[in-house]
Image 1 (spheres, rainbow, N blue to C red):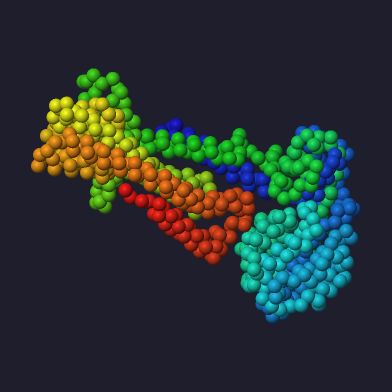
Image 2: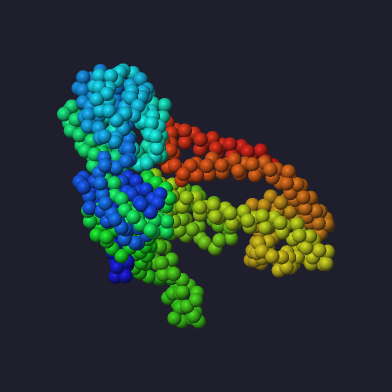
Length: 629
């Protein structure tokens, strides 16, 4: 019990460690890196910070030389900003919303930097480019206050996608300021598409949402994905303040330049910005933006012996050990093994390798109580016999109740493991579904493989039995001789038949039971022939030989049909695997693009319909080539 408690505490520590480290990773830094330019040994880093930052750097473990940090206004780079403003009917018809949107937009355009370019896109009546990139504040401000025509259905996501198309180059200094007062009404593209376009353009989206009628959740998701900012306001003055804060954040962009001879030796950049250390990746000889620059903070912000996936896996393993030890200890405390074999073991010759050596968990009263409860429930529901039949066909030496108890444990353990690993109920349910499907599938696989081997051995076994009868053996002696000569599973089944016959069961009934266990129509046919011959008489040896030759001829025909339908079966398999395989590949390449199928109602309906149609199509194709002989 002490060991289980120790494993439980250590497991919880390691499981909690990655979460704590991850929280520190995103809360510890107040600076954002936008771009790493490693085209030559004169490297530069574009970053945003609240004030002029103090920066030091290491490239592939070597300290840099000649480091300097300047505002981007003193650099030759040209930041680009696209202002997307809501001019739809809903916003334009509300004077307060219209005033908030246009005043906030004017606050953005009126303080344009000298080397900055800005464009304006309106959302009313579908997306409209009101002003292409310009570095003059006055015309831009006039456009947002008086020039942009209002009216029409609102197309926010389409306008965001159009804004990303305006950027002339992907340099990571691209920003979209989205000011909205109503929800999307007319976009041809989804919010997921807009997010994907923003990520592709390495642009950050800053949102000012006026009122309660906006797509707040989708806008917040867009902001979180692009590492922008989100502000919800209810008055015009609040919208202006929010716009000024965005303007200040855009102005606080700096360029750090330094020289390093180790630029081409690897792709590791360690930046220390105002005392906080960040690891970055970059591609030598090019400009790196986007996910390559996602920070992994180390130093004071990470704690513990292990962090990340390693700690999580180790913690889950320790938690599993703790659970197993706890069940073992509880079972031992409640009741030990009180079976008759255990009571009599001191008086026998058992060396401990038999029943006394079995697992204490299996022999404990706790486990046996669970088995008994499962058995009673399954017997009332009427599927205990079906489970026993499947276990016999698969040649698995388990009681049906024990197998069902283990099955329930596997399903529950898989479900909880998925929940711990993913923290998402839907994903955990899918993982649990695999835990529910795989054990029966394995039993069916073993049963099918054993049945195929049995069917393959049946004609030679009948020929051998016919030969023994011709040699003067009785039918029972012939079956016993064949059981010794032929391999399993046929030999195992015939030995069981002999045992049952020795105990007094009629040989025909024992053979019939074997045919039922193996689910073999051909064996049923052979047993029927034996039963008829024993009732009406005749030459049993010749009869068995004829039955064997007929089975061999049917097997030849079955193989010819299998060869002729092989192309159809392969086509069915390929076409059945192609949709889920392609979906998984697209999910791995662009998760945001596929997220629409799970987040949007229409996407969920289409996904469900496609799954149903794929299953029906695969079943249809399979039935076409499934010809019974």
